[in-house]
Amino acid sequence: MLAFLHLSEKSAASRFTVYRDVMQHDPPTRAVFEEILHDETFHMNYTLTQLARVEPKRQRRHLWRARLSRLWKAYLRVATGLAGILGSMLLTIQYFVLLPPFAWLAKRAARRELSGWTIVSPGASESLDRQY
Image 1 (tube, rainbow, N blue to C red):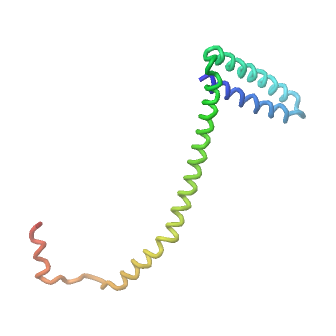
Image 2: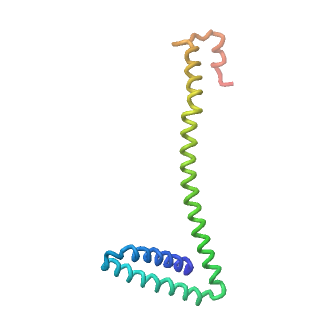
Image 3: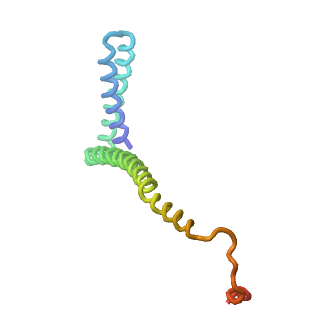
């Protein structure tokens, strides 16, 4: 858990560094971002220190595991989005390419059928008297 917190604080610190650098023309806003950056840096160092205190030998392993977990979750988000796009494309292609020939064949078969009621001969309906 501390590894995830450390990486989150590190990410936030890098974002607030960018925000602070962008706000050079607005000193009051820059000062706010500078203060937040100071807090984020403290949190980042604190979580890393606590991780080193709790798991001194496996500290790096926990950090790498947290990084790989983030990478895996990002991959899953991208794969889900890509699957949604590909699924939509495939269904659209099926609708406009595969469905029209079947509709045409159904219309063609409907033109060959006689319209209205079809009289059934008396001998053909004997099988309807019982189930088997």
